[in-house]
Amino acid sequence: MEVSIMSIKKINVVTLGCSKNLVDSEHLLRQFEANGLEVSHDSDEPADAVIINTCGFILDAKEESISTIMDYITAKERGDIEKIYVMGCLSARYKDDLVKEIPEVDRFFGKFDFDEILKELNIQKRKDLLFDRHLTTPSHFAYLKIAEGCNRTCAFCAIPQFTGNYVSVPMESLIDEAEKLAQKGVKELLLIAQDLSFYGYDLYKKSALAELVNRLSAIDGIEWIRLHYAYPNKFPTDVLTVMRENPKVCKYLDIPVQHCSDNILARMRRNTTADETRALITHIRQEVPGIALRTTLLVGFPGETEDDFKQLIAFVKEMKFDRLGVFPYSHEDDTYAFTQYTDDIPQEIKQERADEIMEIQQSISESLMQQKVGQTINVLIDREEDEHYVGRTEWDSPEVDGEVLVPVSAHLEIGQFYKVKINSAFMFDLYGDVI
Image (cartoon, rainbow, N blue to C red; front, side, top):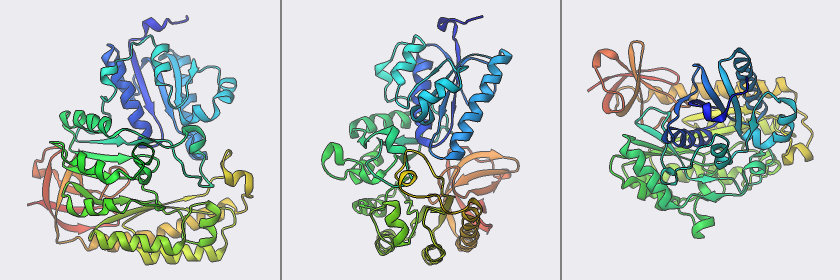
């Protein structure tokens, strides 16, 4: 039997992909909640409607999104769900094809069609809650999305095709949102965007990241501010002074460099060179002693020779990044690389190169972790798991970095900071006792 929109009382939002999608889901959940709906996130429980916030970045993410949609179609056929809606990057990128191929979905929305979603569900938009969210993270940390879109033209990336040009969120709006988060008990803000480095240029005609970070740090209750996804080209070096001098700003930076061969960097259209990348990393470490650097690499890009890959290996060994992720290249339609280059590196070679890089990085990580044994470190406790409390240092971001494990006999409080003396270290995790 066809179900009326008016009968939807319980709604589940499922988020796939990056933390930027998660923030979008949290804003929607708050609007639903304010209109009297019972809301859940990533729940397996029956609901009147489910909204799947998809990722469409690379092949693996697209396959996960499609698989998730099909799983919920099965649940709908079983009677557990009445309505299925799909939004996000995959829906924005392939909407016409998806409408034809998956008619079981009640409606597809683009990435930014929030108003249309509310209209579809007969929900009145609460403008007074535009900067309020229903948090899905632990209550002591939250992501703060400071911009949408991207002005870069990286050859491997299709994101600008469906997110549009870079649009900074006005500083006052971000302060408002961060203050509301602090009132909810958030202690740590993780600043995210497709590219933090460009923040402010469209609104203020200059880099405004350093000013934004300083203003956010003045909010009562905020203890840590962490920076993610800063593009190396035109990196705003004035933020390093803030990071060095402001105790609330974590000595942590996520700066994806992708490669270090001039040949591949040029083919990737990264607008930087290997020497410039080395110089920037050296400068960052000089300006902020003790900083933890996280980066992302891409191997198997079209035209990557054995010599290019050897240069990348040498770079990883030389730079000794604290955290590193590596991905085999995915030949994505709607990208410059897809139209201009042949995907000439076999998949098994791509994976072998990725595995080799990670094996080197594991050794580097283990060595760096061992250096922390004997130190007393400020740790934020995230959760209790089995026989340990699990927390993080200022050098670790949730889900992607290492953790600190403390025995449950310490009787700690989730979401609080503690001084922990590190007793032992493994490849990615530290073990210690509260002082």
